Length: 398
Ligand SMILES: Cc1cc2nc3c(=O)[nH]c(=O)nc-3n(C[C@H](O)[C@H](O)[C@H](O)COP(=O)(O)OP(=O)(O)OC[C@H]3O[C@@H](n4cnc5c(N)ncnc54)[C@H](O)[C@@H]3O)c2cc1C
Image (tube, rainbow, N blue to C red; front, side, top):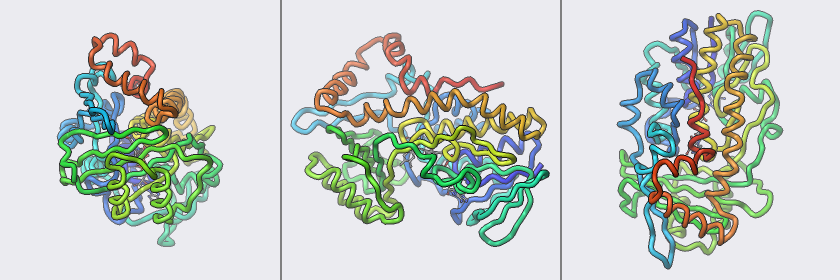
């Protein structure tokens, strides 16, 4: 059975791997001209169920060796002493120790390496049209070529083309959570060792973490814009101005970080939005990962969802013997509740990350300082309905 997968970042290669293992013939098209080579993008998280999928692909040792090693959070408080939170002490209580943080580019490269010998990857290619028939889908590629596939799966992220072609314009399906996120590369001029340094003020967070493999660092900005925000997604200078306006007058290293963002050629800024669809499938087409159910970048475990969703979809297709209607219904049935819970986690993560008042800011600091002093059992209970536990709370089928 011929399956076209659009997108080769996280969900795409995981899906291709498992479809191939289960006897399907996947082809993957990716619009970037080459595989997403290591160390690009931002740090992403794999929580327990995603780590379990990676374990079933025998990739955990390689992922661990490539992980960010960012194990300490340092809270900078101008005028007061900074304090550190050692995540190693907490990881057992938070997420049973299986959590893994890695640069998205590095993850994509490892996944591509694990599948490149068996899967037909086409880089520098995209699609412009889909026409469904009773026995297949005619796909028109950007090159003008048309080819028929039995199934088409959109693993093409937040701004999915497959979703737009089948479900309509993105604007109707995006739900704003009220935050903005910006990231970019800069020199590690603070000589940060394996730690993430965080500066928090009301409605704003700025952070910096090192990428040990390159000697560079990434800056992250998470903020709540006053009022409804709109900007041109292609106008990077407008986005830089917007960031400057949001952080005007901030202390610590923020002015330098803003200057560095003016120079960063990978600068990214967007609103934090969720993709919400009643169903991810229509006919012979379905969606996986951010394309179908992005929970919001950096706040809802999107990478874990992408990995788990790809695995569950491949299994559902295998169990249904390729009968797509049965398989897509089983996929949504098995994953739907987990997607909803991850979605619900996101606003809380955003609220804690960018406190709305000075009192809340102080409370957060106090809670962070107290956490390591509590016994692991109590931390676990306190966190029982917290984000990490929710993101870890999916049991993979055997
Ligand atoms: C700044 C930022 C910070 C984040 N931080 C975190 C975090 O801390 N933790 C976490 O878990 N997640 C985080 N995320 C989210 C995470 O990156 C995504 O949830 C995850 O990458 C989803 O994987 P995916 O494969 O579904 O989609 P993506 O990784 O978005 O990949 C989509 C792929 O499809 C390709 N593509 C797009 N359109 C087409 C097309 N028309 N034709 C062919 N190919 C196409 C793209 O080039 C890309 O390779 C963050 C995201 C951002 C932007």
